[in-house]
Image 1 (cartoon, rainbow, N blue to C red):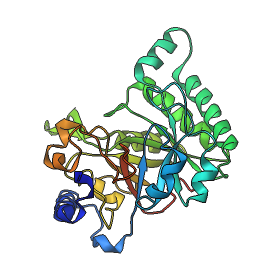
Image 2: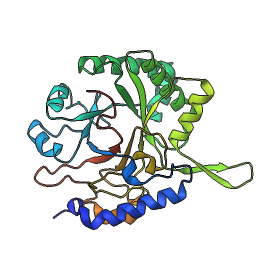
Image 3: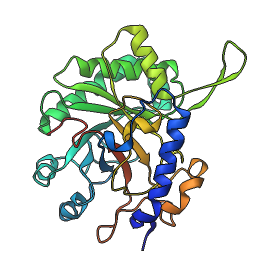
Length: 296
């Protein structure tokens, strides 16, 4: 039996992780875990197949849905699957692949600005969302894989993308890191940290830009409970990033440097596996709504 389905044995671990986050984050509202209902979802680069959906729906309320080729893939196997997922009762986290810094830098050297690249990609994603049948108001999340403070070209690309989506019938969102990383020293000379989402929020506020919804990834244990299917998923605020639309708390494969405390909850190969009989390596996400992108 894989560790993922040992839910009862891991309930205490999840509770301790939640308590640790609340202690470290005094700005988190003082409320019990039961006062904010959360829902569990999954995402993966490859579509799991039509036959697996009924079994997966027993455990998950929503799914990630790629509008572009996922990272490292040469095709998008999610295309045209929205209606079938709807019929099986799934909500959505609609996501599009972003550009890595190296790609933006190469394009800039050839005369294409990161902002122009961002607007071009946003137009393509909006068109894809329309083809897939997502309704107006659906949140489209840009996959920002690089963590920490954004480099200038990354910020130009990302904010051009979100502003372009905001001008469409859809709403902009960003999938980004909520894990604190070193960011030099503060005015008092002491080391400070920053998360990618903190950086993006500061840039949006400074530029008086359109609001962005955030799908935060923070799989460090704690605050993440590891690869578990808790009967009551932890709300996204416990990730340490307040007001996030969703919290990805487990990844496949796990990031070994930050998941030692919950390593036993993952499969021996380091992936997060769904329960039998539908064995898939997945990422796990919690949200306060069964349809975080409002894509139904």
